[in-house]
Amino acid sequence: MLTSPTMLRNNSFTLIEIVIVLAIILLATGIAVATYRGDSPARVLENTSLEFETFCAGVRYQAMENGEERIVSLDPRNHRLVMLKPTEKGTETEEAPEIRTKMSLPEKMTLDIEDDSGEEFTELFRFFPDGGASGTRELIFRYHSLQRKYVISPLTGKLYVEETEE
Image (cartoon, rainbow, N blue to C red):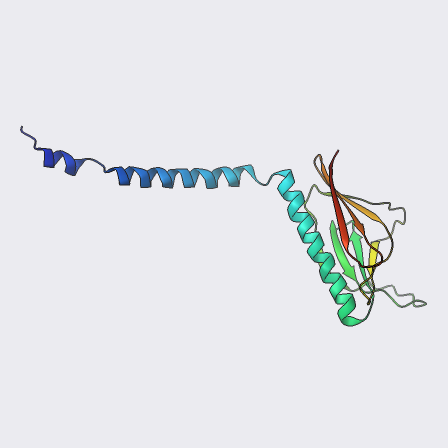
């Protein structure tokens, strides 16, 4: 059976078709590897840090906007940070405090603080209506061997960050 050169060209793949198929295979492989592998510890720490900075900026804004103090507290039972309105002094209430905003922490993320109160919520710091904050407490986020330390300025309410490895 005789075959002509035009018949051979019609039955084979062109270079562009092979390149497109390879690109699709590489894209699918890249997505599969990223999904299977998950986020690296550095990425998890970075995302949590950005979320924490945004959370604190929102709490500070709430304090300045409403002209009332706002508290950033740790809720250890639910592994999250919450914004609370302070209760008025001299009033003893049995009801739960009003949680306005919350930020969940990743599952294996730990937060190093001195907690000897044994209470439901551990106050980390307060934001005041003038934009300042209370205390000079250091907050250390730990995830695997990475850690990021935050210090809040009492005068400006600004968070300062320092990244270290254990």
